[in-house]
Image 1 (cartoon, one colour):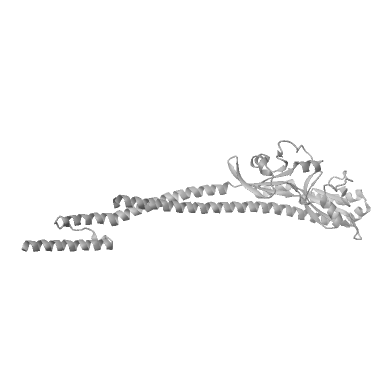
Image 2 (spheres, one colour):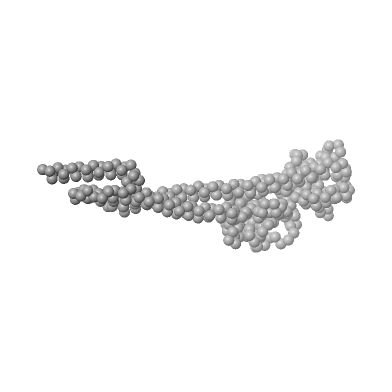
Length: 380
C-alpha cells in the first residue's frame, strides 16, 4: 500500500460519493417542488371551474330575480295570459341572452308544469316533475334554488325562484339558465384550458329527448358516458379514455398528447339533487413544469461533475504540493543521513507547512548529531 496511490484513490472516491449524494438530495428536493407546484396547478384548475359554475348560478338567479320583479310580468303570469307574458319578457330575455349569455327562461306552474318557455314559446304544458327536482322544490318550499340540471334540450346552470302576484301570493316559479358549453368555451379563452363534459349516457338519453344533433354516436361515447361538449375533441379523445372517466371523486394524472405533457383533472359533476350526472375533464399544458424538472436533472448532473473535478483537482494539488513533495525531499535527506552523508540542503522549507518544518528541524538535529558523532569518532 502506498499513500500516493491508495490514499488519493480513497479521497477521490469519497469526493465522488459525497457529491453524488448531495446531487441526488438536491434533485429530489427540486423534483418534490415541481410535483408540489403541479399539485397546486390541479387545485387551481378545480377552483377556477367551480368559480365559473358558481358565478353562472349567481348570474342566472340575479337575472331571474330582476325579470320576476317586473310588475307587468307578475300581472301577466297571475292572469294566466301567456301571450302577454311573452310580450313583456321577450325583449328583456333577448338583452340578457346577447349581453350575458342567458340561454333559457321559463315560467312554471306548481308542481313543475311548463307555462311559458320564453326561449321556445311554442312548447308549453309539459309536466317536468320527473326530471326537474329543483322546480318541484322551489314550488313546494317557496325558496330560491340554483344548480346544474339536465332538461329535454340539454344541460344548463339554473337559477329558480318562486313567483308571486301583486298581493304576494305564490303563483308558480320562474327560472333562467346558462348553457354549460359556452361556459367551458369561455374558460378556454380566459385560461387556455381544454375542457370536456362527459355525461352519463343513460341519464342524458332518458331526459334530453329534444337534444339537437347526433350526439349519441361511437365517436362521442367514452365508456358509459357521452362527450356532451368539448373545447378540443381530438385532444380530449387522447387524454381521457374509457378507464379514466368513471370517477366518483376528483382525480388527476399526467399524459402526453402529440409529444406535449398535459395535466388532466377529472371532477365528478352532480345535479341539483346531488346525483352524479357526469364528469368534467380539464386539461392544461404542463410542458413548462416538465421541462423545468428535466432541466433540473441536467444541471444537477453538470454541477456534480464540475464539483467533483474541481474538488479532486484541489485534493491532488494539496496532497502533492503540501505532503508528497516535502515527504520526498525529507526522505532523500533521511536516506543520506542513514548512509552517513549530510545530504543536500532543503530548498523552499519556509513555504512548507508548520508540521513539515518541525520535521525538517528534527532532521537537522539528527544531521548535526551525526556529524558530531563522526567528528568525535575521528578524534579518538
